[in-house]
Length: 333
Image (cartoon, rainbow, N blue to C red):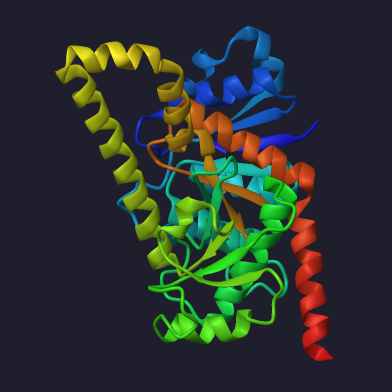
């Protein structure tokens, strides 16, 4: 049975919603959970019927959001350090953490290690668009300053993840720029465009709006731009939802209309809700690591665990290892 470590310390809303998400996933899927955190807070939340599939690794220290990510390497009794150790030693198959994302990335890179040939790991996040399939963006925040070679690796990893985990038959990859023309962009995107041009999956430059119209499946950018896009999109989705609620409340006719459209609104909310996408895999490290938002609710953690299970079932880390080994051989020739 697959075993997932979940770091429950350091999230914005405390231990309870994280544990609840784990329990929901345990009811739906066959796996075992190792919950890393304060046993005094965790144990009372575990129902007796699930205790056989839950192990608690006790610790009370954790990396606070305001602390430097570099401090994680020295805090050997912190929850994320202990959870990463479990993954490194093979005691678990994957790690999910809604705690300090920088600490998670640092420890995963240093202790688990990069896949040979990968210049930098990247956060790969999914976003809704007008089609039935999501858009994939990477890097979404792991690397604020990038070289063109990094973005090429992001494109390869995004393509493989989209194909093997998400289920795209032939993923289309675009490079985020300020225009679709080949000559648009800054020095980084222009240099990256030239390197990506030989790849069959590369469809050229795309603009921010293309993230949502389904014209490409994978959007590649540096982590600074990707994180800005992600946070701005979350803000827009929240604003639209809030405005719609207020407009419906303001008019009796709108309220009656909303009753007839309840199913539509329900489907729209589900599609726009970032909780449904769970977390973002850290692609490029040798084992499965899922980084969740600090404000994750129970549903987000549940979906993050599903992401970890899908990644394990698809054997994505082994496939990326093989792809980058092949890339190295081609470059030698």
